[in-house]
Length: 267
Ligand SMILES: Nc1ncnc2c1ncn2[C@@H]1O[C@H](COP(=O)(O)OP(=O)(O)O)[C@@H](O)[C@H]1O
Ligand SMILES: [Mg+2]
Image (cartoon, rainbow, N blue to C red; front, top):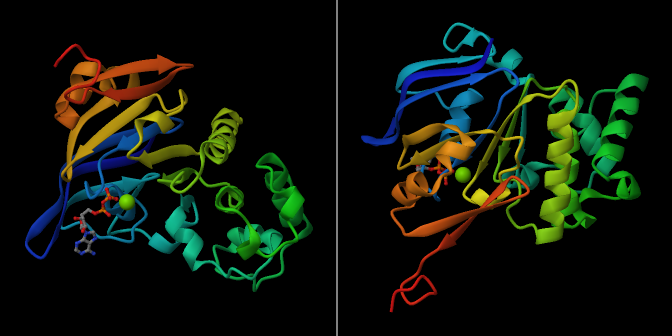
């Protein structure tokens, strides 16, 4: 069963292609990294998947629902979002626990009355992602890393089938980043994991659970497939149009750019 299928998807704005001829299939249970430089169209691609952007051409099917003939509001309840821009839209004076609980209703602000079950789930998620210590504090008083873990807990409240992570580690220091990624790793390894799409411009953030990678370049798919292959030296050199080396540690890649004058033997 496919979680996502895009066929020849393009999106044009002001006569210019922002995304062009995207073809992509994601099987249920797969986890994908989507890598591209700033402005390559990553967030636009996610906007199409979640139905906020309607493509100019092509066909999109998410969780078996073909866009154009399904209720997008219903579908969106099955899609979780984590991004740093979401942080700005929340009611920042609300306490952490309520922010997590409101994920159940996909609302900004808690207006519905959560059930006991909702409270139990929120507690479990806050525990899982290390949010219990500050669950009664206003969201605005949290550090960037703490905020991002709260957003992750919130996005899991509805048991999403697809979890979209749009540059979730932006602004996090190395410890906060690893703490957050650890939470992602746990989600991936849990029995009922959503299909995860992890979008970033940092190859270093790709955890081993993201064993598929799509490289997006200027709105087009440069390459896609098994991460080990796509993130190989030859392919990445072509993608970045730069001389580089890749090293792998604990199943995670790292790029070393070979600047002129660096220790790559050139003078
Ligand atoms: N609503 C829009 N109207 C016009 N151009 C847009 C719109 N949204 C995004 N773009 C442009 O599309 C390109 C890709 O943007 P985006 O998808 O945000 O890239 P990324 O997330 O990879 O940084 C950028 O050049 C951006 O300015
Ligand atoms: Mg973006």
